[in-house]
Image 1 (cartoon, rainbow, N blue to C red):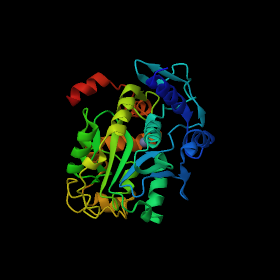
Image 2 (image 1 turned 180 degrees about the vertical axis):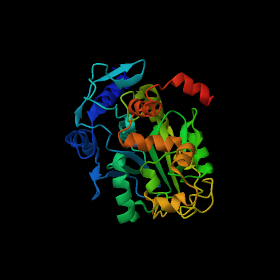
Image 3 (image 1 turned 180 degrees about the horizontal axis):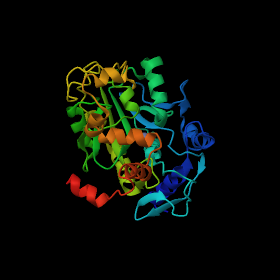
Image 4 (image 1 turned 90 degrees about the vertical axis):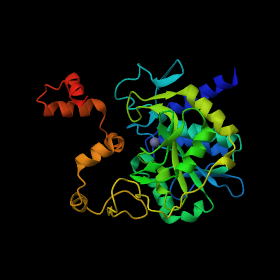
Length: 334
Ligand SMILES: [Zn+2]
């Protein structure tokens, strides 16, 4: 068996686990793949492992998937694209879970290769970044000396995220230097939603998230480009991380180029949740404005709450009295 063929076997096995946060399948996955590598749990249920005496990069992914049930699922691999098997019945599995099994797999590969870093596989990202937000709030010295937090938790093939949750979390200089290291189509992308590295943005200079080759996360149509993932692994193992440019001041105003001036979000240490919706709307911020300005983030929020395209389509159709015509709508939009 070639090297890649055995990698693909491992990927197929790891991706078969449906791991809602705190589930039995999650525990089994940890015991099978992470404990043997030396990962330990912190008091917030994050899994961590340090390689090197004083690493400057925190590698980030998350343990949980958005599956509604714990267990294993049947997969299909066709032309290098991994998806749920057609045989997997509706209700048996709600998504592929490449978000974020892809990121976890990459980190296990980097650990096996001895790449220096502070590795954190976060607890309950899909429930609102619980593990990372607890770590930052209660044990921020854990990341002392870390200059960059790099998450493997972004759809597509080309993003090096510079903005999350409306604010800047990484400098363009950093994003360009990381894109140069990664090669391919990678480039700075300011349309990030949020993942665990957003929680660190007030204490770590450069916080980003990079594409790992999945699409349509949180849905049954979710796919993972396995060839892309294998190539990315090879790149990560061969990279010269001393080429990263560190420029951002973590204390700087994250909203400097968010598009409006000094709106008070009532944020404390970048955690989500605002003081009150009235204070936002009194400043001209409406739901419609936010939907138009941040369609990507709103879609993620809706999906996180269980909405999928099918149900949203039906709900929108109801507004048209059941005479919803997508073609008509596209013509209007064009
Ligand atoms: Zn994710």
